[in-house]
Length: 367
Image 1 (cartoon, one colour):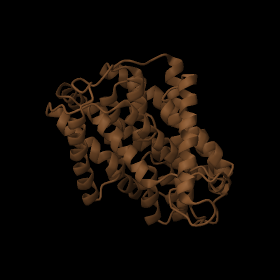
Image 2 (cartoon, helix red, strand yellow):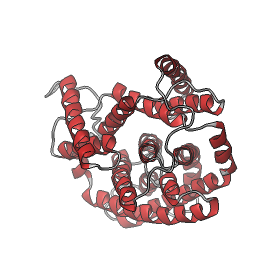
Image 3 (cartoon, rainbow, N blue to C red):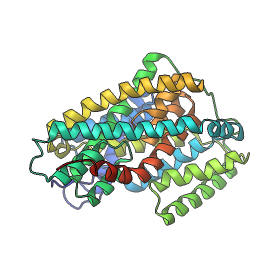
């Protein structure tokens, strides 16, 4: 099994880690400003992501610092939670059945992806045992968090480098493709601003920071996935659903959070990543584009059933990461609460159901 280098881990060899982080941030800031000037969608995340990924592939000593990434997730989680006013909460609860359909769709799509990967790469991965091949292809196809799926896959003896590579490439492709598709479509501004949280209040912002930090610590204590995002999101949602208004998130802070999240995604694409298994990455890229297309069709059907805008449903059901799709919804003002609700519920459901579905699947397989 090939090792998976962690670009966020400090190193004492070559360029000092602190300098690598600083230079990467300078590059990311320049790329973000260029994207702002070019009027690209979500410039503060896409610019850093693409620039960092590009130079990383060519061997540049880029790095992402874990505390910065966690801080970015903290800010974005809090910003998204502000949209969940009491009225919005009633709307989300009323559409529980649509969210449930989205979960079933994601599980079925991930399983189909895994089955296809197994058939296409059975000969290439002939050195793996039948059990390893099943676990590798299944967890590479599951539409869940990259780190969580990789950890679960490791417990089942999968090749974790291939699983992590599949999820990283899928999220990159979805994060880049869908915002530009939305821009070409000409949709934005369906949701101008979260009601009741339009102004920045320093004292309120400090209180919000303390309460969301408490939510993060609770999530960490419970061992929940992605605690910096989920803890801040849940804490802010509770406040917003209760009608409590403390402060909006400063735009500059939100932009900085998007930047460090973009960097944390971009540094994954090292030369070792590209050379790990080119045919595998090609299959993942092809399947990711196909999944985006069929998810768009599914989103259109859901929009007819729910009355929500198709763009909101596309973001809610797309096979991307929760933070990335929610940021896209926030920046383009495309139904943030529904997108976040769909993505969060899917993440939780996949984390809970991925292994039971896997056991059900392998019970019906023949070596």
